[in-house]
Length: 183
Image (cartoon, rainbow, N blue to C red; front, side):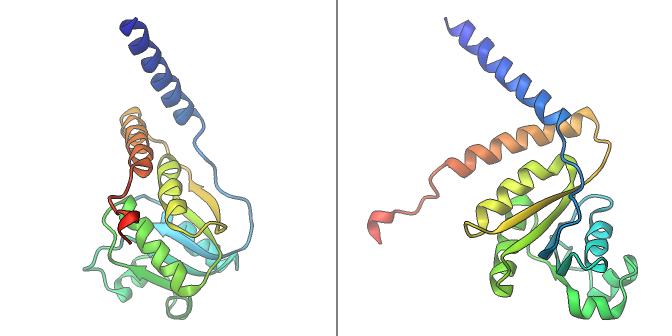
């Protein structure tokens, strides 16, 4: 009986991985949002966010997870961002070090800006976990458009990300340690 249970769990896991690997999200359609949120870490992400701003599909861009040693002028030069665009429309976030802290940094910025919608830009293989973390940190009713940057991930990348997604989903379902009865 235990062997059957283990086999069933393995099949669920394996089919889940297969579904994850073959259904990577695609770039989003041309829809307007208040902001575009870019999570650093993969090729093409920042370029896609800037493209969204330049096309007028978002008022502002927030880049989460920027290395604290990067200066805005260095960022502008690296990604060929005009000063006008940097001044009006690009905010760099330096606090996040992983996907979960990206979500917290994004939530704080969205609250400060009083934005109700955002386009989330990250790599296709990272989108499921990033979306889950970001959506879980924003108020209910916030509209998030998934805009995945296409890539060609290898099997190891997909396997690692799938396991991170599962761990993230499990940890989000656990109590946060606060005692509601004490308040």
